[in-house]
Length: 190
Image (cartoon, rainbow, N blue to C red):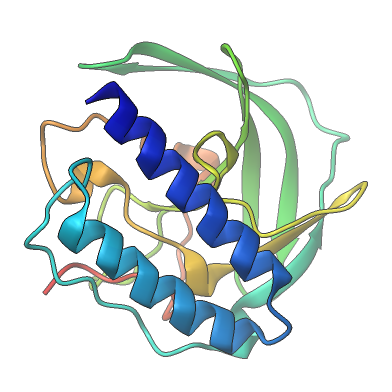
């Protein structure tokens, strides 16, 4: 089981490396959706092998290269989970997405660390607890430079707990809740 999880994470990291290397974001999205469905359908670490993943059509207007604002008061979150104990996060900044709003960007403040950017929007066809745009500890990373993050909401995906309640997932905190409906990314399963 442990090596299965390692294999899952390797495959996800390789998938995102292929996405970052692709010249065409829409083609990269199609590849991502297909390979993600393959993982869900066949891998022993899948949250639900029977799930039929659904994605909104690729929207080029949902892709942003967002500057990470770091001139904020420090903020810390301790998110209790049933399986992982308390998961600590420190806010490292905030991004503004034109026409959408602002989202807090978090750093996983435990071993290994990682950038985490969840979002919960008003779209009734998306998971109510929110989706993940970035979760670099698991390899979900679309790229960055010194102060800019690539945030393509077409790649927003449901956390594992959306498919199986035995998975415990940190959900979007208040600074990651949007009043608008995002018509991009992974939708509720069929």
